[in-house]
Length: 322
Image (spheres, rainbow, N blue to C red):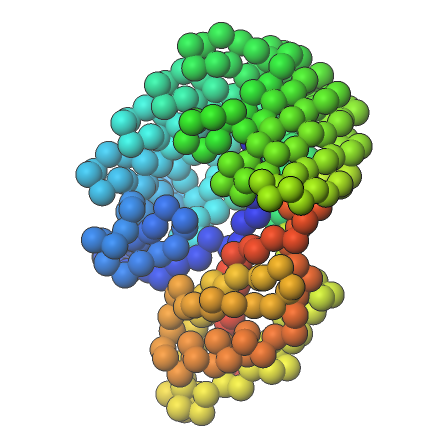
């Protein structure tokens, strides 16, 4: 299962299509775009059904094929509640995931593109989106090959995890009582890294990784750590509040809003490639960019014990007091 970092939020600009319906155009990387022709898929959020407080969320590929259906306690970004079903472009189910207040809970199923069950997991609770690993709060119950043959049953067996496109086995090893156990090995072709690891009851004891140019590293406890502003997210919030200068013209006109910026935290902690993914007005956008450009260096992210470039997103809110 691929180690990944996600941004602080799934964020986007919205287009109000009607009073009771919002339409959003998205790229596969989660970035929202302004026009349909630039999008990879479309999200539609409709008002709750009668006697319900949950918004109806549906996503579609550009050819009209269903991509997702679920319910959310919020409009944007969605914060799913209950079962959420996703689909491949060929119409087959991709996953059935259960949520509580936007956090995965209970069991979920993942499928191969041919419709066969790939993986069944049990979520142990907690939000794993802020840099924690898939395995930190999941138990593997079932793992099958693309023909339907089980390699893990009732939490025991030999796991084979594929890359996102099911083109090669990314990692493999023993599962005992739903957790990693013993020796594991794998390869992340997109980063050209091979690795071996040793586990005991789900705990990563030691890991050794090697890049294609011969660099090696050792690590323990976790494969990766996300980048972080020194002092954490609360310190970052204090930095923003101390340094943002509300544009006078925007203040005079009472303009408020939330700018979403995407950027890259480089291996040395510097921020680069700062872009606006959700705009308010140019004056406010430019101020958000300025204050982020002047940010002190972050603590860089690591993967397999080595510094890595990580793309990140943050919201910066501009709000006028009463």
